[in-house]
Image 1: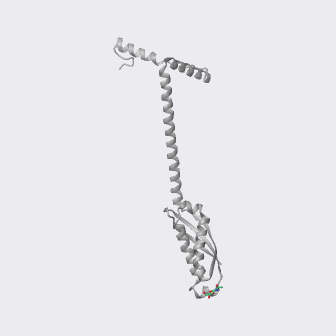
Image 2: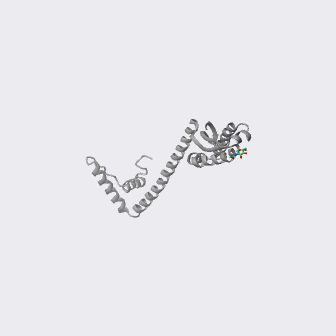
Image 3: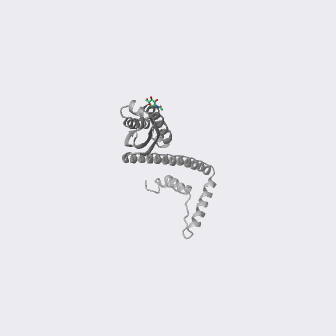
Length: 196
Ligand SMILES: *[C@@H]1O[C@H](CO)[C@@H](O)[C@H](O)[C@H]1NC(C)=O
C-alpha cells in the first residue's frame, strides 16, 4: 500500500515554518493481527505516519531538515516500524517528497542574508581604510623626515601628469612657498593675503 501524507505546515525547532509532504509505503504481513490487534490498522498507520512526520521535523532545525533528509526518513521509518509491527503491518519506506518555505518567509530570509552580506562588505571596507590610512601616515612620516623627499614626490607627480596628458602641464607650487608668503604678509602688511 502507498499513502500520501498531505502537505502541511510544521514549525521547525528554530521557529521556521516549513511546508512538507511525504509518502509512505507499507505492507500487511499478518492479516489476522491487523484485524485482532487494532480497530483500523490502515487508518492507525496513516495517523501515526502523520504525527511521526510532525514530531521528527519539529525536532530539527531548518538546515537539518534541508541537509539531513536521509537521516530524518530513517528515524521516521524506524519509529513507525516498531509500533506498526504489533498491528501486523510492515512499514517499508517513508519518503519526504518536498520541503518548501512559505514565500513571505523566503523573502524575509533572503533580505536577512543580504543584510549580513552588506554588513560584512562594509566592515571589510572599513578595515581596508584603516590599513590604508596607517600606511599613508607612515608614508607621510617618511616624506616629512626629509624635505628632499617631498620635492622628489612633486617631480614624480609632474612626470606622471606629463606622461598621461602631455598637452597640459600642471606645475604644483610647493607648499613652503605659500607658507612663506603668509608669514611675510602677517609680519609686514599685518594681514593675510586672503583678506582676513
Ligand atoms: C499473526 O498475528 C496473530 C495475532 O496477533 C498471532 O497469533 C500470530 O502468531 C501472528 N502470525 C505470525 C506469523 O507472526
